[in-house]
Length: 193
Image (cartoon, rainbow, N blue to C red; front, side):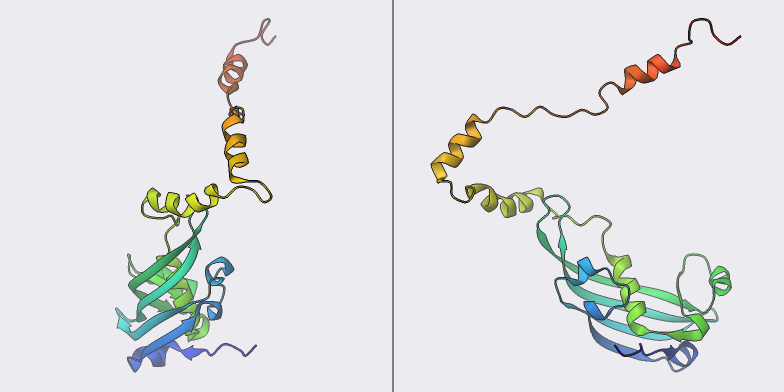
C-alpha cells in the first residue's frame, strides 16, 4: 500500500486551492468497514483559504452509502450531503485558540491528507441512528421474509405451526427490582450499636 500523500496546509490556504475529488469509501483512512462494505464513493469539493488567521477548508460532500436500518436490520440506502467550513490546525494548542463555534481538524506539522479530512467530515454527516424514514418502509422490506416457510416445510404447514404456537411469555428481568430496593431501604431490626 502506498504512503498517503500529505499536503502543506499553509500552501493550500495561501493559494486558495480547490480540489474536486471522487474517492472510494474504502480509500478513506479509519473509515468504519461497515459503511464501506457496500462499496461506493464520495464526491468531495475542498476549497481552501484563510479565516481569522487560520487555514480553513470549505468541505462539500455527496455520497450514497448502504447501511443497516436499526429498526428492521435490513439494508438501506443512505444518501449523504454535507457542507461545512473547517479550520485546519497544526496542534492541540492551536485548536484551543480557535474561535468558538468552529469545527477544527488536526493536521500535525501542517501536513494534511485530503482523504482523512473527507472521511472525518463524512462520518460527522452520518445520522447517529440509521433507520428508514417511515416504519412502513421497514415492514415492506421484512414482509417477503415472513411469507416464506422454513426450508422443507410446505406453506400450509408453516401457517398451522405459527397459529398453533403457544403465546411466548415476555421476560421481565427487572420486575422485582422495586421490591428489592424498598426492602434494602428499610431499617433493619436492632440497627447499628
